Image (cartoon, rainbow, N blue to C red; front, side, top):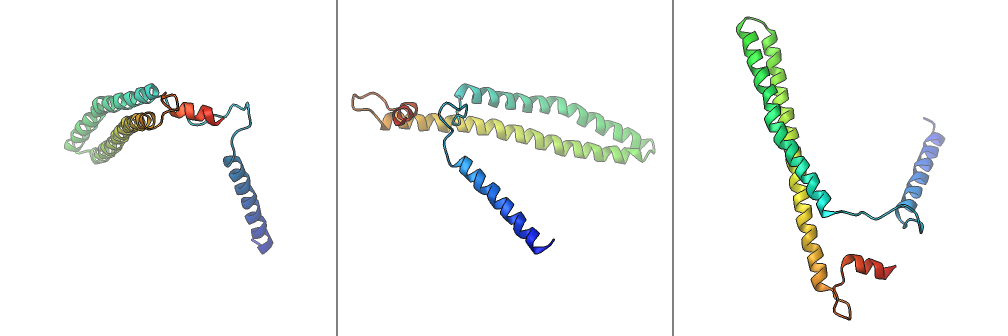
Length: 148
């Protein structure tokens, strides 16, 4: 690559970075479809339940393949077929991948439960700490409305 090509590439990347920064560093135009991040507690709860349900299903149904491949590999190996050792490797890989997937589902479920709990505590703190002059609670949404 010639030196001027390198400089041109750097300039192109820099111009894209400036454009990205400009887009990220401003609010959407009035009336545009863009919204701030909105999280609904009931949706997080449903997603957490789905992750928990998926983990439970993987524990039950994923175990069928583990048992079947282990038994088949033993039968093949005991009958003098080298394929049994290869199938045992498939069995071991299945166990590893299944355990990783179940752990990931557990982490997702736990994180969503934790996020719901922290959000509820934060919202409660905001409600208790901030009141308007008339004594009504200043929720985050009321504060946002007043700033518009």
